[in-house]
Length: 269
Length: 269
Image 1: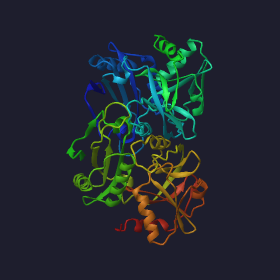
Image 2: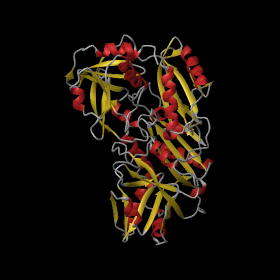
Image 3: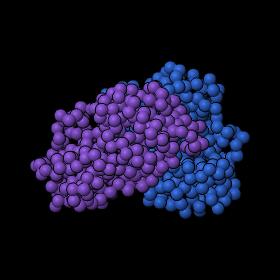
Image 4: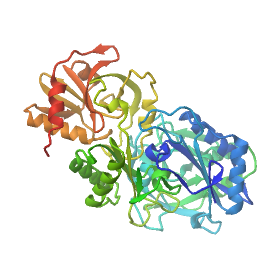
């Protein structure tokens, strides 16, 4: 089911700035029994991303009700897209008005099913992410870098590609955030210059703190991952997955991912 | 008038990758008496941009006929948007298929009318363009940097904002390419790391060569513009305009823009 500004529809105007410029933001979240998982975090992130781009964010209760409505029609995943709506031609912002709000449900992809392998295979991408602090961390609709990076492989055995920025520093996966354990502590890249700061990442950092695991956010070279005891990726749809192999490097199970996964899904805010 | 894949329509699917990821390219061109201006250059650039993103480019004759059809309905400007069409969720490329092709006509904006002032006022933007060689030069649908830069001013007297990259090197205007004259020679920024290499830019470089004016494409600091004898901006809709003022710096008429403008519109390829 698809709602566009609260009404059943499956199209948007060709004049929408979401299409013309990628002028908007989005969220992808899991649903269970017709309810969105991690809703408080998702709405907070949506509101923060809207604020960063001076977009109007829909009212939380209204949006929650639309999410539940589409989730009831189709279990699994809900995607929310918010754009700046229709404007005159040209980059100048139109007068402040409600954004176009698209809420749609979809079946959980096979790779996100509970039966899917807990451990995944990854590779390094050759594409380097550009550094744009004004857009870093935001889940906006300008995602050509991700499209180009994902096009680097078509081997279905490879689940994810890892990305560095143009300074050679590790950033994330193409569709996930990246974590690793070294000497019993949890590490993840700083995302102040590029990448998307996902809700699963935020929740995993909080979960680690609850477990008493020290966390570090910083700029790390690829060698830091290769030297890790366990490597993992996360997003709101796949949850947390252990990286069993990265190109030619393999890691045995060290147990960290399993423990963190349980904490990630604990119903706490 | 709007054509979507050859048929009159004014919407696209909410699942279109042009909306989801900005996964597509576009062109904006002038029309006159129902015909597109500079068509050969525009189609060549569209085909090159498609090739860079592995998009299928429509057949030239078919696209030309659609452009003429919408141009007849409404004189002034035609915009072409090509996207990778509808795909499954996720960044992976869908099986190769025809892109979504949107062709729409619009009235010539007031600022592009012949009666509009030939000389314009510009300002420096504070936003710095990120350097992404894989996307540089392409007129793709990921234009949030342009949106953010254009949002830096709302004084209608200011026509354009000039942009540097994150290395402090001059790149372009928000919606135009940038040129200047120094010691009788023509300069324009290199666009191999960011910016859009527009058709008007290509044509102006050719026009200058025909006039015997030496041309230089390179990496220049803002000071190079301030020291210029004449500064100008161009795109396919506004043509060529002299920059009379840039923040607090003004330039008197030196005559270069007028001569180059005549050459720019000469009907030669």
